[in-house]
Figure 1 (cartoon, one colour):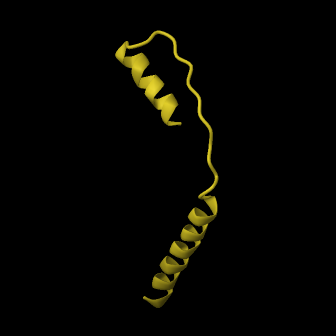
Figure 2 (cartoon, rainbow, N blue to C red):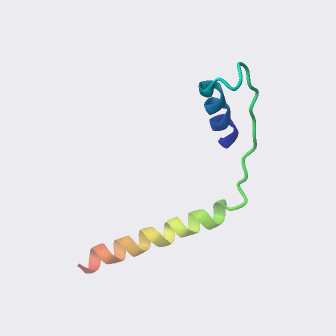
Length: 51
């Protein structure tokens, strides 16, 4: 995604006329991100139910 954003900025700045950008996704951290989201939701619900 970042390479597409840099390409967009270069086109707007006039640094290039034509660009080819690309990249790949990394789902290595997805299990950790999901677990943190579940924990955060549980904390919010606990705070909501106890007030």
